[in-house]
Length: 193
Image (cartoon, rainbow, N blue to C red; front, side):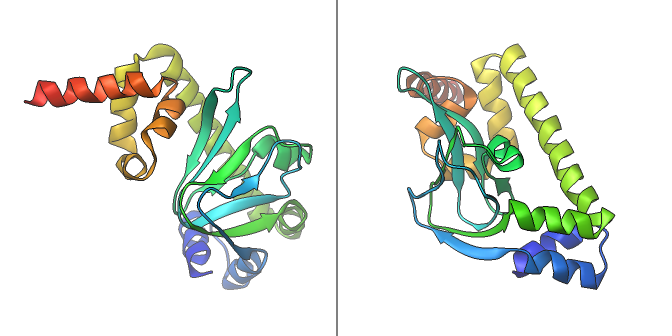
């Protein structure tokens, strides 16, 4: 619980009592590598804070192609947010890519926190705003940059994720095939030689 406590102290102006109330709303859970914590057709009842491990959220297209929507490592959050926020059936899979230690908060407990204090409401609103801004930047990047530029940007921003996720996940996240990502990487290696 110290990890979430450190996180909230870095990101919100809360009293010690509020921090303790916030932390007590979370339940520790573990997920084994390849375990699903959210699946399509079931309501995502929790939002997850990653204490240890790596996860991905993805959808599967009509032809069986996987599209990675979100990645998460330590100190990041993950869920199928449309399902979680609206409490309707999920459309995404959220899967542990490594053995994970997570802290989960239920939709109900989050709403109780928000009703308790405007500071909790502000914290979750700011999280949502940052997430929305990130998704907008990601969409613009995907629409305006070449595959190689997207890869370079990803490598500069998230070198730790690149080391921990399989190539097919990175390719899917960047909107390209695994083969095309291999070609980009090989071209970069040959240019350095």
